[in-house]
Length: 227
Image (tube, rainbow, N blue to C red; front, side):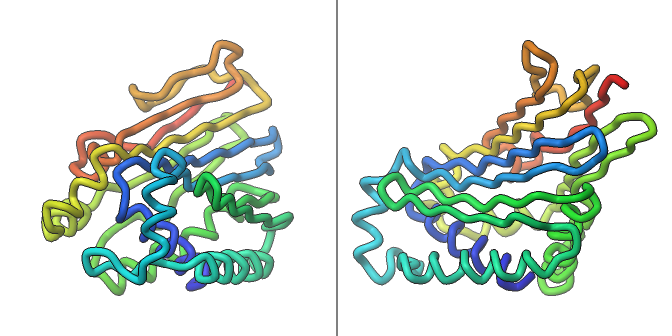
């Protein structure tokens, strides 16, 4: 899990040099609770700026990760995910022309997917004295309900306020987007910012990162499906 954390830190460190980035979380869920997850770090809107920055060792006190650093961390993350029960078909991609990075996997149940994040969050809570919930994803097959959980912790805002003004600006144009796809029709969603697709097979949610940092919006969502 430390290796997964390392690649997250490396890719996130690239966002410290640009305010235009997006984290995209996609889950395709089957009726039996198995499925596929794809996470994308998209920095393409600032690709010219990042290409120039990556020629440097550091900027404003922040170390600039090299292509070798990112490639090695992605490989280690992939190898480690292979050891987690129920997680298969792990793949990573790197696009240095557009600065888009992805990691994907198949899971036999939502519990397997949730375990990928559980240990990481537990270790972060212990180290940073935060209180984030270790539960992220769940699926109740008896009532056909999928849940994406997120517990806001005041440490997010506290750490943000410790940044200098230049570092704070990087979050102003950033977004978090989730797309969840299902075999059954979506009946309703709990998050008022979420949108159901016209064919009722997917749920789309886009939240600006500043709203997440300040606790004004949440990525939590309970999605009820038809039987």
